[in-house]
Image (cartoon, rainbow, N blue to C red; front, side):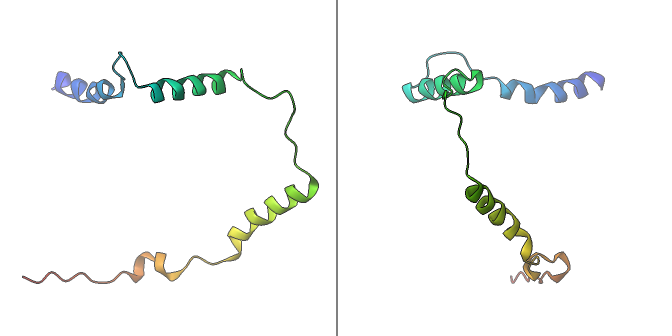
Amino acid sequence: MKLFGLSLLILPLSSMAIDAGPSSAQQQETEGWLVLQSRNQAASKTPQTASAAEREEAMQRWLKKYRYEIPDLYDPDAGGKIEISK
């Protein structure tokens, strides 16, 4: 029983590994960009800054999300009834 349980735990790990081998040019390009990004090798020397007006506009867009109530559509107790006809 323990062996069976252990094998069930290990089973998903085999699907997580990517097979080694040739990949498409697009895949290699994507992996190259991801490596540059993760290692911060292609970062701009000029820091990106936002003006006070831009920061305020972004804050207002973020706060706007909280002005509205959750619609009744999402009420779990307001569900309908499903009828299956034969």
